[in-house]
Length: 347
Image (cartoon, rainbow, N blue to C red; front, side):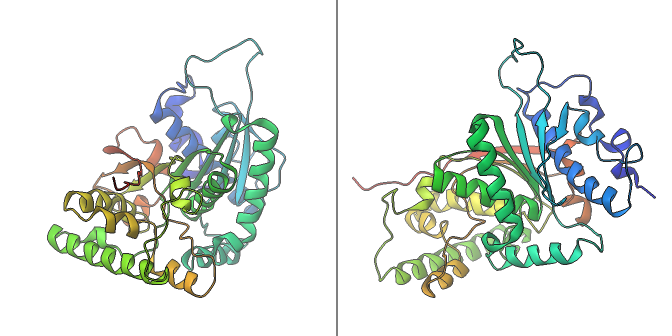
């Protein structure tokens, strides 16, 4: 039997079905989250053999004038195509995306549990690039962008699905110079949950110590020399102009470290340790060890820039704080901050 959370008319953002303002960031966030929810319900429809008209997934995209493209992403993702109005119609301000590539997180289904667990493992060991789901998602994204142009394409994901979206966005920016508009909900951050520590002095001390150790290891791994600031040799600088939208719940231990990750970089500048902070923010200890072994040393979850949206609502439990449903609620207590990475050069 279907739960209320699967039914759009009961728990979806029905307030947007009569009018969508594509200039409104709350509307764009809500629709991106709804499209991701549509992927979850597609998989549940398949698992429970729900077919039209009993299928519950279609309202999650049809309500906003999207349809599902015919690419097969095996229900770990979906490609939505916007049903355009007449050719002479123009939108004031921002246009809706022509395509949205979406990726879900794990789902409690026996038919997909093994593949979901495998993806979680890839994410934990910084090996997502070798996963089948990433490869299919990357190839599909390249195909659509090549055919229709980057201005017409969004990426959206939730949980580990946002890790796929993040890595696709990174690769498109780093290797092709293409910066896709990206909506990433509750993206996992592989780190101890320092952000949950209440004592600010202890928290700062731990972060400073970690930065010093990480920066020191990065220099040691580079033969005792500071890494190059040349954009050609520094992928972090190349990535800095790609600014994805990250949606973080401060009570969600899976993703809350992104808050500390970006805030700490500013604090290091304030205490006069900006050079150490900028070096440490590019690396994780795991990525440095991998690089020393001759493997890909790029820490996939570390990004130079982001529009951070933080949900600080305190009434949510652990499961709800990591859920996709929160991101179209109208009563959220949200904080917004743009973090733009800039390398400082000596004069």
